[in-house]
Amino acid sequence: MIKNLAILFWFYKEPKICRNHLEVLKKHNPNLKIYGLYGGKIKEAEKYKQALGKYLDDFYITPKHDDYWKWINGDLMLLDWYEKRGKKLKWDSLAIYQWDLLVFDSLLKIFKKMNNGQIFLSGLRKVDKEVYDNWDWTKNWTKKSKAGRRKNFQDFVDYIKNSYKFKGLPLCCLFIFEIFPKIFFRKYSAVKNKQLGMLEYKIPCYAKIFKIPFFRKDFKVFWNLYNEDIKDSPLNAIPKKISKRYINKELKSKSGFRLFHPYFKLWDNK
Image 1 (spheres, rainbow, N blue to C red):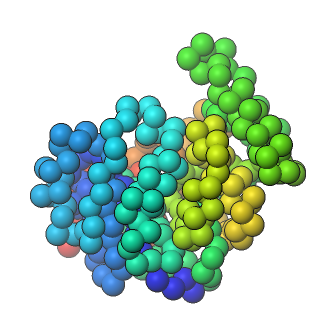
Image 2 (image 1 turned 180 degrees about the vertical axis):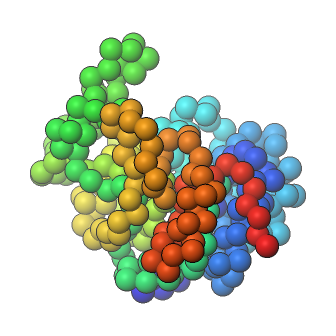
């Protein structure tokens, strides 16, 4: 089992929903430290601190960047938090918990077979031909605004092959829920060209380069490679809310899922 697990609650909008989801999180994880990472507008940070401060053991404000930069470079936001705040706090493993996530059990119980030093990345898989030809970050786009994504990926792969002798197919994930060991951030701090690439393939590739063992658990993460209708799944990375009906069905089952994303509404805690 993981020892000294902490939670980094990552948020930037919807303070009432953030507070409600934090209440659910604390209800099921009362003994874990919850650190706050605010990535919204700096001028509104105090409003969020007032609304959420009593649920958080620390409150950190991400430096000013535009919304697109934050979306593509969430790994650099996490690294900034680690270097300026996180390394001073007490934790060995860190669960990255986004504001539109819901959990209905202890994270230590859900990940009871995970060991210290391992990393968990939701939807982890190889960038095989199916992914390469169909995933938003690697396929051959005709839209001018997205045409550079495949080249950016290829430039990243060339970089890690030349700089780190990376072998085999690159890895990717869907950045929905993650647990990082502290050593990942220590090693990532030393990477020279951290701006190159997108976090959903950067992080798993660097984890492999750093020889950090992966913890694998099947959460039926929905990979939307073909624009198909979403199937019942507890975790998906597209902005389509998990239905309350599906969540309640899972909660009634002893073997059902307890981690759900995304859920954009208040949850009745009674």
